Amino acid sequence: MQSSYSGVPQEEKRLELAITADRTNVAAKTPVQELATPGGGRRLLKEDPLPFSAFLTDSFGRRHSYLRISLTEKCNLRCQYCMPEEGVKLTPRSQLLSTEEIVSLARLFVQEGVDKIRLTGGEPLIRPDVVNIIAELRKLEGLKTIAVTTNGMNLARLLPSLKEAGLNLINISLDSLVPAKFEFIVRRKGFHKVMEGIDKAIELGYNPVKVNCVVMRGLNEDELLDFVSLTEDKPLEVRFIEYMPFDGNKWNFKKMVSYQEMLDRIRQEWPGLEQLPAGGTDTAKTYKVPGFRGRVGFITSMSEHFCGSCNRLRITADGNLKVCLFGNVEVSLRDCLRSGAGEEELLQIIGAAVGRKKRQHAGMFNISQMKNRPMILIGG
Image (tube, rainbow, N blue to C red):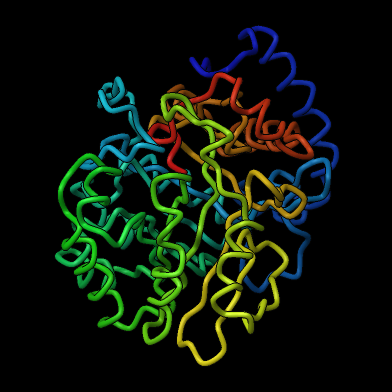
């Protein structure tokens, strides 16, 4: 279960996992016994009035019902905030999760209470079997939402099949409305393909269609008002994301535009901007211009973290479980699967990792100094 991104020696990690697993097992005894089936397996049905799985509940009481699975490390763009210009060294194909392994892990997490899965990358829509994966996930009892985060390059062509397979929600990355600037940021052509993908999503009835925009000072912060204007007559939720530090993206505090600065600029143009009520696990602070069809949101990971309500877990394309986007300790679920680990053993390992999740991330300045994967190898 060694990870090249873990700062913890292997033997020490095993010891910590074992100790935490024991604690998790004690906390989980009642739910495990209540969920036991005659054949010795475990199930969690939607209608069962049982506590949320102890294996997916951390020491601060946060319940992790949202799983993000990276389908691939490959991408057909080279966004400045995500991947170094020269690209990254990709994991050999044999070490990536197979379709069967993805579905198997997803089934286990859904049995324990996960009700939303988001497929990420790399670029998930360049994986040849993405439609089949969604169709298999749709069969999982208890899974309410299947979402995808995409750069939109292949979206218009694939979306009819994706929707038929069971795709519920779409997030599309778009960092500029100026074609030349778009190409500068992503280091590739394709602006019009992304816009076609957004239009196709609206045409097929997705509402809202979420548009993710990473805001970088000196690059695209002058387009804030243009992005808000998109929501006037389209069912979009434009989400402005604070620039975050990851390996290879040359993050600099001076490049970051804070949520409050963005909000102030927008309110200068639309003083009546209204904040909408937030759900308990929402990452975005959401606003609406009165009379506009869509809305805008802010992902404030740097200036106002939302760690206290975090309900997310991540599985990388090579099968590592990350309990925090900014954490650098990972556990290989792939190795466990391939060594023949049963469901109970997997749950003990997952529960131990979740149990060690920290109260909050280290803060923007400490994060910028930490060894972590490039965003492209995490999956967002």
